[in-house]
Image (tube, rainbow, N blue to C red; front, side, top):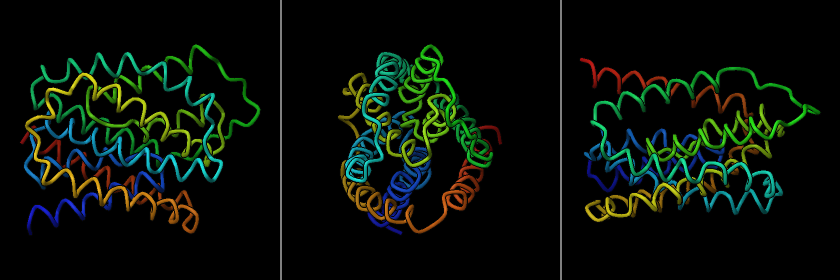
Length: 247
């Protein structure tokens, strides 16, 4: 199968995940870029940030039109992660590729288990600013280090820490993803020069189109079912990456 077809298929799946779940696209983008398209972990992280920035901003527009974005709270949450994202992005290029791959596999497994857990009901719960800021900073550092938008962790964090309902958490997570990805890209700009744009461009285009389909899919398929299916995919990806590192 040609690289172009692989990029289009992988991009469509990434976009569907971002549009439907408000996150998780980069958790698929990085291993797809590494194992299907031959990128190194460092190059895959940079390319993933480019793809996720474009895709999440498109999905953000769709969710904003539907009234699913809490701009004030989401901006404050994202702001706390900007500096950690930039610092971690600068340091990521100095780490061994095996370490990055193993760390990414661990995060993918963690995200899967979080998606399999039943959603917490936090309506009326008091929001703690310090905890919210610490969570936002952690998500920012994760984005910079591994090239993931952090939406797969942002959604449950917004539900449990800021007491958002699920639809608002999905929409607002896209704001957080976009901000963190841009901050991390600012410190990786030198690494974008050697990327294969003949692969990244169609990958990104397919992801953007997939995000719109994902938004429509979220309105027709139950959220728990989507999360369980995606969690199964993440567990499989994590297992394959760990086997690649240790076997």
